[in-house]
Length: 94
Image (cartoon, rainbow, N blue to C red; front, top):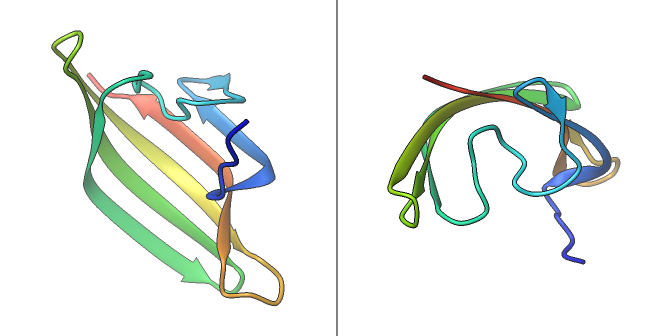
């Protein structure tokens, strides 16, 4: 089992309205391919941060491009400068 250090242990991950417990975490992203982040906005207030991300996933195997967007909520880990994602919500674009 691979440890995913970006996410809190009890993170809630929603993709296209359905809970995801494993990889791939974002809507429209398959097992094999490449993700390109198009734009990102991050706001921080105290111990919380939230980010809005637009992305594209390219699958060379299927000659497919999928667009999506995600909102992430992050929490600073107590006593450290590290952050973990506690909530991720993504949806597939057109």
